[in-house]
Image (cartoon, rainbow, N blue to C red; front, side):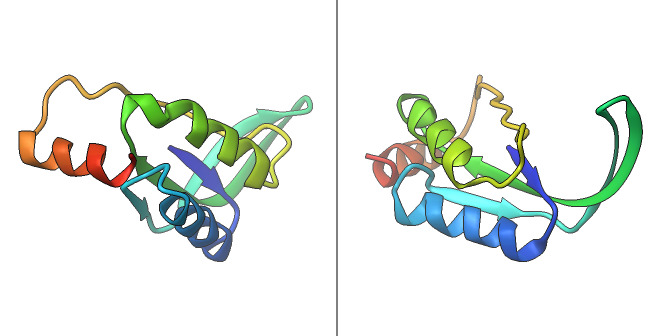
Length: 98
């Protein structure tokens, strides 16, 4: 998952990951309000979340893509392991990212 400061940027990140076959699916969520500390100040901003669905074997490629394509100095890049899921869906993710 990552966040960015515009819907357009979120969609570009999503499309790039799918086109590069480093994610099988990317979901762009409506804006969220983020409150965080940055450079000794508390900031509030509107961001769009992008949730990428990929295989564990493709994580490094997805992270490298996000670091290269993202315009934040320190982009949020968070991975959550899948412990269970529909076998057919997980097979689809593996197929689309291979």
